[in-house]
Structures are given as structure tokens and as C-alpha cells.
Length: 302
Image (cartoon, rainbow, N blue to C red; front, top):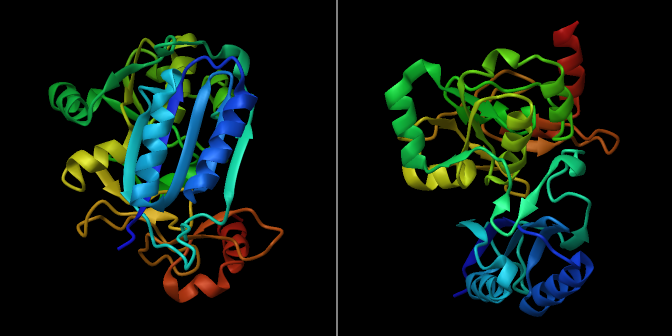
């Protein structure tokens, strides 16, 4: 019986020929019937692929055979299903591209990478170490969300600071604005979906004078694997595929609020208006009227 799985992974490592890696990765995925999104740059690889469990395992094994990717950071999750051709229902297609950055902070010149990963990033904390730090230092610890603000609407670490950013490129301006200079002498724990964004964010923060910066190793995904909904995480995890959100257990708190009726929901979807790129928190009842959410938000802020 085919078992749908999704693999989330990354590696920061110098790559001499990103285009050659792109062609190899494209051909490998196509040969195994995998869909997903893979970004490659001179600084490494960042991807999410889905398909049958056996095919995804073979993909991971083959990718790790390449010396630069032997320490690939990986997380597994359940896929929605497979179509009649055995292709993942969670991704519309396979996309493998070369970019200046595998995470688009708009600051490729600031990132330094060697064979061990990002140079000058935050101290990695395992999920257990995150809890231990909070147990030891209490409210002194500040969780700093490294995702787009809309992602935090359905889930975030308890009492986390969520910067008002629409995309990852906004973080450099936010940090340079001085808005969070008051945190520079505090223990700051950065977190993101799978850990890749915080590899870069934590290094940017340290370069700007934040003295005690940590990152959740493996991101929210690994923390959820360890503690589900019995730790410091609250709500559901936003994911960049057709699932849109992921709950770690049936005890997940529902902290999202429908943009139409304010009812509790963890459901997210793209705005139905083709001209609108907004990601919306909207309950099942009002999903069909999602375009009204833009008008609702505008009305609420007026």
C-alpha cells in the first residue's frame, strides 16, 4: 500500500556549481515521481518534496550520498495522499531552481557559510534544551518568530514576539529600524518552520549587536515531534503546501480567528481573488467568501 510522506530539509554548505546540482536534483526527483519545491544557491539547498514513502526514502539516501549533503537536516510529516499516478496531492508540480539565497532575506552579502554551516549564527538548542532554558530563566527568555506574520496567526510559541513582516525580506529593515534594540541584552530564542530561516536570522541579529541569540534546532517541526502540544508551542503549524496547516496532536489549541466571523479556526487558504496574494485565516463556513476578508480587514482597521 502506498504511503504518502513529505520531507522537509536543508543544508547550508558551499556549492561550487549550483546549476549542476539543480539538474541532478530535478532528474532525481523526476525519476522517483516526486513533487515539491527545491531552492539551490552557492550557499546550500532548501527543499520540500512529497511522494510515496519508498520513493522519498530513496531520494533522501541518494541526496545524502553527495558529500556536501551528508549532514542534511530533515523532518518528516504525513502527506495528504497520492493521485492515480502515485504523485503527491500536496504539491501541484516539481520546481527546482537556483537562487541567490535559499532563504530570501535580501542580504546574500551578509551570509557567510563554510562546510560546517552558517558562520556566526545563534546557538542551536534541541527541543529539550529550549524547555530547560525557559525553566531556568523564566520570563527573561524571549521567543522571536522568524516567519511571516500571517503564519503566526494560527500557531506560535507562548508569549512570542511576532514582528509585523509580510515576507522574509522585511526582517533586515525591521532589525535595522531599532524596533527590537531593547532585546539586545536578553536571551532571544529565534524559531521558524524547519529551522532554515533562523539559521540566517540569528546570524543577522548577532551582527547587529544581539548578544545572546539562540535558534530552535530543526524549528517548530522538530519541537512538535518532541513535545507535540505538551510543551511551549501553542496552536497549529503553517506549512507551504496544500495542507496549509499541521496539528501535532488532537489536543492542539485553536488560536486562529476567522477574518469574517472571528470564530476559532486553524484553517488557512489563499485569497480566492486572483489579484489577491493574501493568506487568510478563515473558518470552513466562510471559506467560499474568502475575498471578503480583505474588505473585512480594511474595515476593521479604519
